[in-house]
Amino acid sequence: MSRFSTSIIMLLGALTLGYAQDRPQDVPEDAPKDSVEFKQTYGLRVGADLSRLVLSFTDENYQGLELVGDYRLTQKLYIAAEIGNEEKTQTEELDNIALYDFTTSGSYIKAGIDWNTYQNWYGMNNVITIGGRYAFSSFSQTLNDYVIYNSDRFFNEDGFLPGAQPNEEFSGLNASWLEFVLGVKAELFANIYLAVSARLGFLLTNKEAERFPNLWIPGFNRVTDGSNFGVGYNYSISYFIPLYKKAKKKKKEETEGSEPQE
Image (cartoon, rainbow, N blue to C red; front, side, top):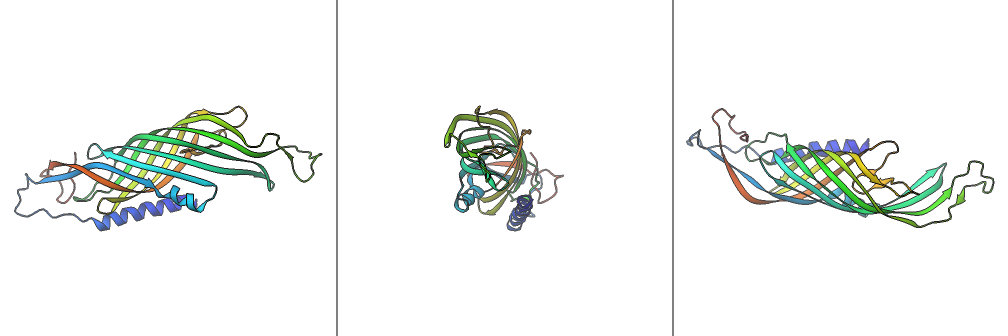
């Protein structure tokens, strides 16, 4: 719940900062109303996920990096992608006894589209998007240590019997999923954007080892037993690289100061 609350606060804060920075630009009074041209900037936005960088420094059991990018095709439509690498070590316990701990390490790529639903004032470049991704992850898992569950504990009253094959690696694993994305990007400074997104994934394929299931997938996060759904988020900072501008005539019926529709 705390992560959800933080995401909502970040979303509202990012949009507020972007709105405070950009103001509607006044059109000269002597300009012909039917011939005013609005030049909209098109280009490539690239950056990195801040949350994974922070976790890499604060959590000794995690290392990760995600690069993000999008390219504006039309006024509303963007193609978007993320590529990353993660390594995470986790421990599962029962009655304060460590049953097993494992390390998952691998890379992933996500590609899809974002659709801007936010109506900017002229001169603003903030976006509130809904979108989708197809994602694929390739990874390995190492079962570092484990114990054998025994309910009567006849041979070991204080715990369970240790496993016979520690540090066993399971490689060649992979998974694919579809991802629904809801996000906000706000321009903090010239061409510098802060973004927040929430993600809901649905597993399509999940190749597992025979002796150990995939409990955590890079890019997808925790795998829940009996469910194909997973959730995630990211907080990213990116830089917009302007490539060209596309002019649009302002229609007479449009509200003055609002961005023309495409």
